[in-house]
Amino acid sequence: MTVQARILRLLRSIQEESGLSMLLVSHDLRVMAHVAHQVVVMYAGRVAERGPTAAILRTPAHPYTRALVQSVPAVRTKSALAHPLPGTPATPAARPTGCAFHPRCPLARDRCREEQPVPRSIGPGRWTACHFAEEVLDA
Ligand code: SF4
Image 1 (cartoon, rainbow, N blue to C red):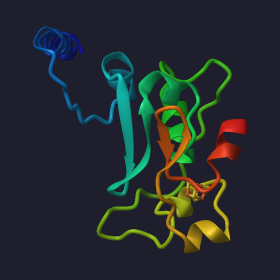
Image 2 (cartoon, helix red, strand yellow):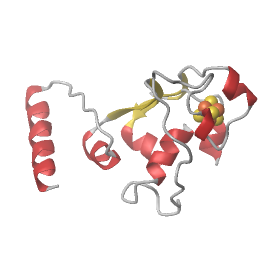
Image 3 (cartoon, protein in one colour):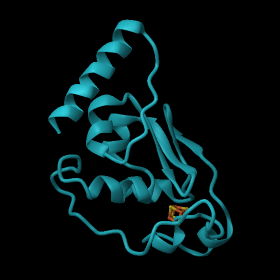
């Protein structure tokens, strides 16, 4: 953890001094929360959600993002409880029909199994690939 923190600090200082963009690929939401201004959440090789990191972690609009956030005590909101995600992750080589997340999604319904959601705008700078993002935001 100490080495990781040092490397992240170094990368960030290089990025700020040089004015360059930095693309960081990680499974660690805590890292993303501290380092990234923008985040793209991927599932089975497709974009599930993207936008400002703080907004996405505070109010996820995709059920997969919400499950990720709730699985990390240091990131999830105080009121949220951890709910383990059922099933096994899909892969790009064996993607379910429609929304690739539907076998594991608590909100899945017929449309999800038949129609692949494409990323759509749900607010300033925010995009999600979920047919029912508004329900996720309201939940
Ligand atoms: S499109 Fe349907 S299955 Fe996919 S994340 Fe949204 S609610 Fe769940």
